[in-house]
Length: 321
Ligand SMILES: [Zn+2]
Image 1 (cartoon, rainbow, N blue to C red):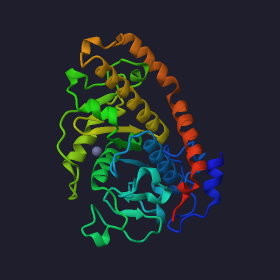
Image 2 (cartoon, rainbow, N blue to C red):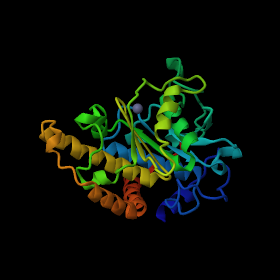
Image 3 (cartoon, rainbow, N blue to C red):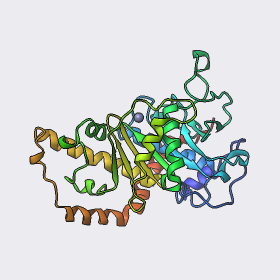
Image 4 (cartoon, protein in one colour):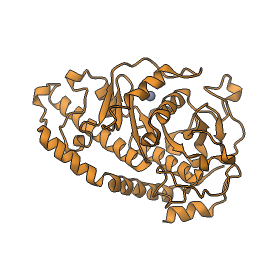
């Protein structure tokens, strides 16, 4: 694939060991055709940020996506659980590979692509150190908790305050604050989303462990036979998890579209729930099964098409300096 050729022809960052020979992480395949490097994952993640920005899902310099990175891809072979996280202060619209920090679950930055100046944990304490690479502690607390709880089922974690989903989160369930089966897109999320009704403030505790982060992550567990793909966080936003980036991004897109149609329908009905055309359960279930049949391929083709366009539009997404 052209993307692989492009990335492997470029110089590798000095902080990276040689290309991995071990099993390829699900998060990277098949975008990197079985030979993913840490940089491949960082480029994919930067593309995801730019795409979500185009979709209007960003909010300031907040909200965050992470990808779990297997140990064989870590610099110097460090045997830590770690994930890529965006550098605090990066606009999604300008994200590049160098803005994706590799951080372990203790909060230590393992790779900053050689930029040198690193803020340990949390927000910088003085303006003099604001230029240092750091990450949002709320991002770290929430995403670390999800990665540790879900393992490969949560290899990719997306968190946004995307407008229509967040609007539903501002409504009580009886007023429509749930995904209802009012459109075929909604059926994609039939019975695989969870709702957290216990918002407890910002997850910004930088001491060991963060109760709010752990609590949010626990919402995604669900019964073992019942995969939860998204958690609606009342008064807050959404968490989406998947084994790979393309399915997570496809869920992000279709969940926001589902919520958009529902919000618009509620507005048109003046908030009268009885006027919503909710489909029969058996139709919703059959439509869900139809979605499942092409979920993986559809997600991959959707993401790779945008990635191709984004890299053509701005090759600087590959930049590590
Ligand atoms: Zn948030």
